[in-house]
Structure formats: C-alpha cells, structure tokens
Image (tube, rainbow, N blue to C red; front, side, top):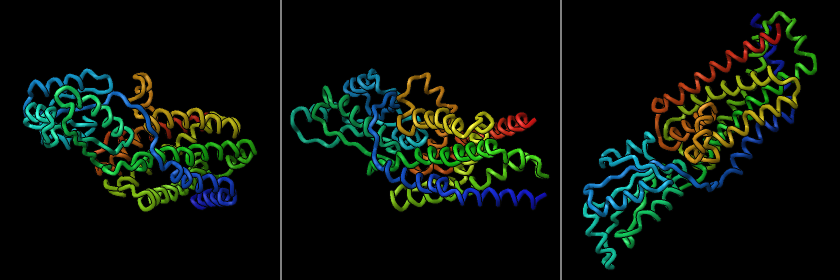
Amino acid sequence: MKHNFLSFVKKESLHILRDKRTMLVVMLIPVVLMVLFGFAISTEVNNINVAVVAPERTDGVKEAVDRLANNSNFTFKGYIGQERIDECLRTGKATAVVVFAADYDRLAMQATEGVPVKPIIQVILDASNVNMATSATAYLQSILLGAKAQQAMFETRMLFNPQMKSAYNFVPGIMGFIFILVCAMMTSVSIVREKESGTMEVLLVSPVRPVKIIFAKMIPYFTISCVVLVTILLLARYLLGVPMSGGVSGIFALSLVYLALSLSLGLLVSTIAGTQMAALLISAMVMMMPILMLSGLLFPIENLPKFFQVISNIVPARWYIDAMRKMMIQGLPIAAVWKECAILLGMTVSLLAVSLKKFNDKLE
C-alpha cells in the first residue's frame, strides 16, 4: 500500500515537471513579483495609535496633545513613561510615540523668539510599515508644529526600518499572496483537471484510498512551494536586503503552516468547482481579491471601514503577513506571534477537515 501511495506521488510529480507552463507560473512569477513590487505604494492612513511621553504636563503640552487627540487621523492612547516606549511599539499598542522635552514651554517660547534650541519634540515610530510611518510623520508634524511649537525643532526617529525601505513593507505581503497563488490555485486546478479528463474515476478504483490519492496530489505542490519559499527568502535577504531578525527557523515554520492552509483552500475549491475555468474564477474572486484588499498587503487594515476590518479577520493572509512583518522586520521571535500562529493553525485544521469531508461526501 505504501508503495502504491509513493507511486501516485511520483506520477503527479512527473506530470507537473512535464507541464512547462505550470512550472513557469510556479517558479518564475514569484521571482517577477518580488522584483517588480520593489517600490512603496503611498496610501492615506487613519486611526494611527499615538502615545505621549511628557515629563511635565504643562499648558503647552496639554494644548499640543489636545490637538493630537481631536484629530481624526489619530487615536490617543494616553500618557506613558519613557521606559515603556519600546514595549508599546513592539506590542502594537502604539504606532508612534511623541516625546516632549522636560522644559517644553520655555524652550518653545525661545524658539518663537528666534533663539536656537535643541529638539523639543521627538517622534518615535514603528517603521516596519513604511506607508504608515511616512504618513504618520507628515500628519504629526503638521499638527504639532503649531502654537508655541511653531518654530520649534522637530526630531523624528524611525525604529525597525530607519532607511524607510519599501521592500521591508511589501516582501511579507507578497509572500502571503504568492503562496495562495502557487498552492491553492494550482492544487484546485490540478484536481479539477483530473475530474474533467475522467482520470479521477480511474484513480479512485485503485487499491489506494481516496484520501491518500488527494494527499499524493498535494505533496508535489507542497514540495514546490517549499522551493519557492526558500527562493523568496534568499531574494528578500540578499537582493532586497530585508532582515530576518526574528530567526529564519521561526519564519520557515510559520510559512509551512501557511502552505498547508493554502493547499487546504485549493482542495476546498476543487470540491466546489466543476471545471478548470470555474476553479480559476473562484480562486481569483474568493481568494485573490480579499488578499489584495483586506490583508494589509496594499492598504493598512486601520484605514478600512469598520465592517471590512471585521471581515479581514477571516482572511488567512492578514495573520500571516502581520506575523511575517513582526518576525522579519521588528525582530520578534515566533513565541511573540503566538496569537497569529494559533489562528493560522486553527484555520488550517478546520479547512483541511471541511475539505476532506466535502470531498468524501462528493465521492459518495
């Protein structure tokens, strides 16, 4: 029985390798996407979480903070101590922290009189998302450089991505997009193609159980996806200079879970679609569009209407992309993204169970 299963795996692998068009899509498109998306996509953002460090809460500080809190682009998260800045940025409680100088009012008054002073307002941002950091900087400068701080010196520090490289932002997003393309779409089309040609019925009367036949068809795509994963990580690190601060092993482990989830999605689509064209359309409409619009790949989740923010929770790529940004750019270990890992693992198990059940029901 084991020999029969391995024979099916070998047969499917050879079939894929002989299909030059499929191999072109699977191996070349990920590389092309990684290279072509090497630029920042400017988007307006809302609901930027901002915390404030103020050693002295003087009238001038309160006036500046009031302008900040009353602006619709920001969500004021309260005052924090200097020692909590790094914690708030790493945990996502704040996207930006505004630090006022200890003698803010006096220095601001001197600045308005033309006296050279040291920076009296410092903004520290999480620059792992370049678009968010760029927009937040521009908004904060326009709001805080008013009243007493009109001519004050303004200092900005970018954490995690000080060079503001756009590749830091798009690489995790493209990874989430590519694996759906390779795993889900190719798997669904492959299984449906067997149905259309009538070879699926021939396979099902063999001594190998139907579930093992499905796994035999999925294993080659999983292997190819692992090769694509290694290729993408090498391109990201050595061609685009994206750091792997959180550890390659953690990044690879979570990616394997996401690959399994994508394969399960492909299997689910194959139970719904009757033709290859239908499988492609369902994959494009049900998976591609939500990934592009609701995962944080192109547009910040915070900028979406509340309804779509809720809907985005069921998009697997959202959790994968968020976790990849934290591990690759912010340098967090895989233990720090346990929530995203648990959600992706739960989605994988649920989708695989539903897909196999629907497939078996359809055979019966």
